[in-house]
Length: 195
Image 1: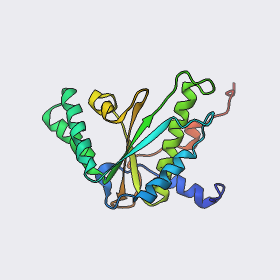
Image 2: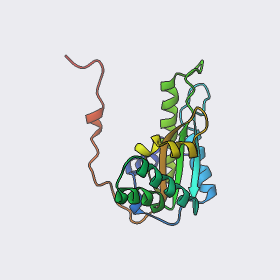
Image 3: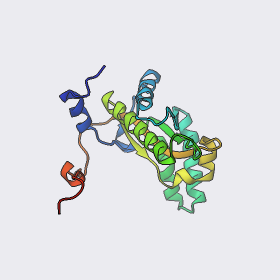
Image 4: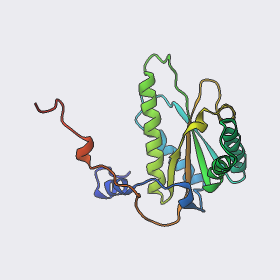
């Protein structure tokens, strides 16, 4: 088991950054690696033993079907032909995508909706951290497509909500994010605030 107090573990987390579609190449994670990433997601903090999410891997030729859905969603949203083509390319640009689907139970007796969404967020964070730890790159994509009726119908069953997609592959180069992250002091304070 990894010692989470180790400097190496923390260094790995501090080096993680999102890698977008145009910076990803083959190879994508194999099925065993994808299972390990999913196991990491399942270790996210939970509430009342819930697993209010599921994943769907989109690999190989299945990306063409997703591209069709993205293009259809763009046309239904009134986007131009050029923008619809860009949306289509987003589905084809990464070697693999993993769909994130939430299964939130508003009437659960032990876990509020808020707590269930916290678990979904924790699972996604663990998944992305595992992607990085295994030497791959990835990024979460969302946007208006998650509300497109044809896209939702393709992925979601009753009571499910589409969260988005994680694009996955091997980073074309090792680098760092193009923007500066805030310092910890910018987002951490004592409470109550000093008078």
